[in-house]
Image: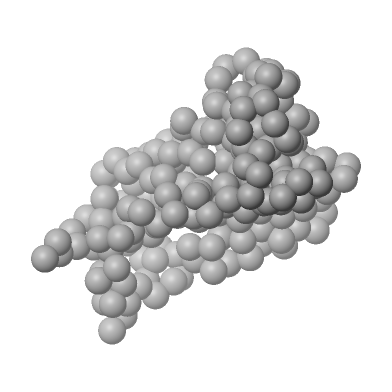
Length: 221
C-alpha cells in the first residue's frame, strides 16, 4: 500500500519493513563501489583484480580527504588528479550555491542518475534545475561535509555526509524545520578530456524521511 509520495516517488508501506537495514545501504554501496574501483584499476595496471591496488603506494586508485587546500597529497604520496580537483571544486561550488561553476566542467550531454529515485538527468541544465535546486528548495542550508574522494582515473568516487535543515517543501510534505544528516555515496564519470559525462548518487530515502518524522521509526522487533 502506498502511504506517501516524496519528490514524485511513491513510498510503499512495505518499505518500512526494510528500514532497519536502511542505515547500512550507503555503507554497502560504498564497499561495493570501492571493490569495483579496485578491480578496474587492477585491470588497467595489468595485474590481477584481486591484487588490491588500493593498498599504500600502489596503482592508480588513490583516496583523499576533504581539506581547505587547493592540492592534497594522497595516501599514495602523489598529488591530487585533475578529475579529483574538478570533483572537489564542484562540491565546494555547491556549498556556496554557485551551480553554474559546479557544472562548468560538465559535457553538453550527460547521463547522471539519482539511484534512490530512479531519475536520469541528461543535460547540465536539467541536472542543475531539477536536482540541485530541488535539494536547496527543501533545505536552503544543505551542504556537502566530510567528503573523501577515491580516484580511479575516469571514475571518481565520493563518500560524504549531506547535512541541512528541512525549511522548505519536500515533495508533497511541508517544511518540518528539522535538521538531518544523510550518508551519501556518489560517483562522477569523466571523459579523456576531463569533462564530466555522467554520475550516480546513492542515498537512503527512508533514513531521511524518518529523521524528518515524515515516516515512523522502524520497528526493531
